[in-house]
Length: 68
Image (cartoon, rainbow, N blue to C red; front, top):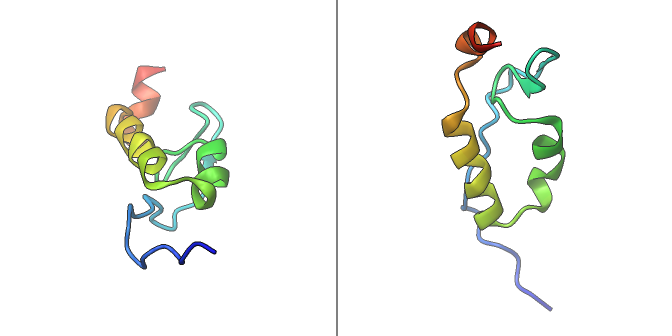
């Protein structure tokens, strides 16, 4: 049996502002897609870091509407 993962690791980007923006398909709080949010608990640290890299390339919620 595998030991449980350590209590630390890649933190969630969630800031408890959970509302999907229909224009972008991103959460207005953390800018993740619904698929990224739903999969987060099952992702390993490498997959979570990949999501964080994607988030760094997405404009802030306030600027996202200007790019559409």
